[in-house]
Picture 1 (cartoon, protein in one colour):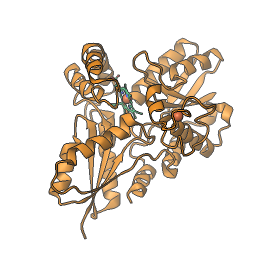
Picture 2 (spheres, helix red, strand yellow):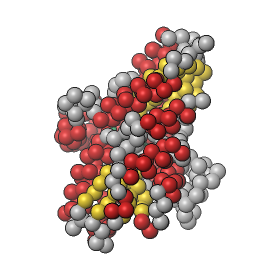
Picture 3 (cartoon, protein in one colour):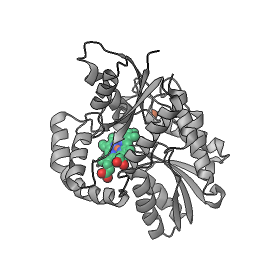
Picture 4 (cartoon, helix red, strand yellow):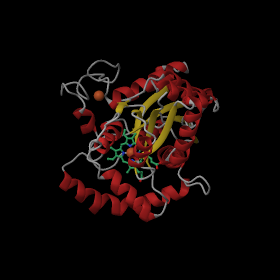
Length: 337
Ligand SMILES: C=CC1=C(C)c2cc3[nH]c(cc4nc(cc5[nH]c(cc1n2)c(C)c5CCC(=O)O)C(CCC(=O)O)=C4C)c(C)c3C=C
Ligand SMILES: [Fe+2]
Ligand SMILES: [Fe+2]
């Protein structure tokens, strides 16, 4: 029987934590019109003239702090473990490839390997639980761009999002149990941030997202692919699995870049308020990421941890991401149709 292809795609990471490699990575990433969605001339000035020159040396230091001597970037390391575990779980009938949207391993090389293996049925799984044009949409666009000139275009299906996947929700809740959640004063669900403008552009009615009261309180036909609404849904589902009452947790958004408004509340402001309220111990989920990476290991544990302590808090504990947890690999296997 003909083999089927599965292409796992995560965001990307620099090839090394040197300033030169981080600069190369940030340039490719931030010049993507779905990530910095302003006109190309302005984007070039912002990215090449301002953001990257200032950010690359700083980011290189952060990457150096999380880079493992043997396994390198945590994001790539866990992604490779996921690929190997999924390949083993699916068996010989499938070829599982891994790619990064930016830098390496590239989507182009992965598609070429599938083509060389005569695979004509490919399922693309962008490894982002919640849909965003800047993440999932960008992967979809890149794959379509790369196959557009092939003589024979294979059957390709794309997974848009899996924010409510039962086994994924269970894996996050299981990971939290290692930390005795009852011993924490408050729990945060801290998602990667996104400019508000990008959320609004996904609302085809132009009247609901960030305009209607409680627009993220439930999913409906208008907001079912809204990143913020899906993030709130993921958090509600994990909270329900853990029997957390509403007052025990807060949904928030981290990693803001630039001065435009991003989806709120911002994690750093929530943490500051919790410290002011006398909370001492915080447990933090980052359910926008399926692998631990710079944004979880460094930003949550070190940056937010230090900020919280400076304001009188005692401890910020990250809940590990899905990484290569067997239940998560089972979740991925279930997504392969
Ligand atoms: C305009 C800027 C950015 C948007 C929009 C954005 C969306 C977005 N990003 C992820 C996932 C990841 N982002 C990561 C790092 C990262 N993201 C931005 C900017 C935007 N992201 C920057 C500048 C960086 C680099 C961090 C730094 O240099 O300090 C990562 C981590 C990569 C790693 O190697 O560990 C991930 C993962 C999603 C899912 C998303 C849209 C929802
Ligand atoms: Fe990002
Ligand atoms: Fe929305």
